[in-house]
Length: 314
Image 1: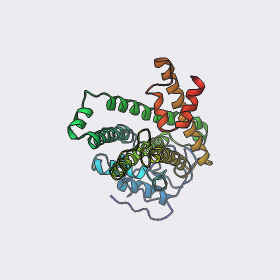
Image 2: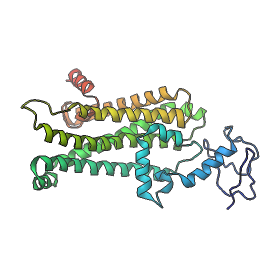
Image 3: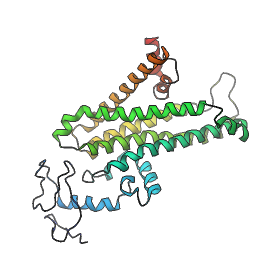
Image 4: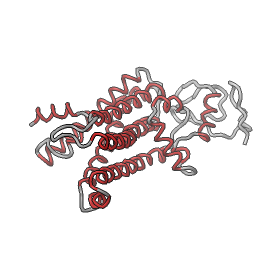
């Protein structure tokens, strides 16, 4: 296979065999002699579009290498999602996403979170009560860790769905710029991955720091707060900041939308509003009260706002 296509002019189609499509509308660009898509009118550089086609072969993302190096590409993608600027600066609009592997990231990331949550529960129980007590506590007899995990899973999936719906508010702008839904899907999935994965990474760090501080300082006084309790509030704050940054950078840097930062902030605001309304509905429909395990999930992110909502509706 020849890949000669060096200059700004079109490649030699008689010897060039890579598949090249318009990153916006998906039109097949092979056999064209001008650097302009006849379908959507997008002007491009042959060098850039061909480099993106080659980059797919060398891409570290899970969606491109799920079949030949699944573990390495999965954890590599999760790690890159925690660095939004680097992720969206390296991602190219010319690199059209693979929808199937991209959607597969969702159950895999939730599986990663489930392993973290159960391991974290077991580790703390072991730390306080010993190994055998931890085994009993983490077993099927004790339902709390598993029920809480189910609630958190539903919560995170609701955030992802709400983000997708929120982005659809810009459907006219997206259609105007001929941006395909698969590119929106990439922004949604990888930004959502940053939200969930950051909880895992920060949670592991806090677990180690918390255990070390407990060993050094001993238990807190009766009714007092544990040492460095503020770090537990930093966990949702950092995760939320990464989520906002990833969505906004995806809009501005990756999708190249005008006013991408503002659009990302509005989309995230709508996302959390949808989730809050959903939890309000569940609370009143099933519990007739806001003091229930489902609505308490919001306290992980906005403790002050959650208490205010309870005071208004109770």
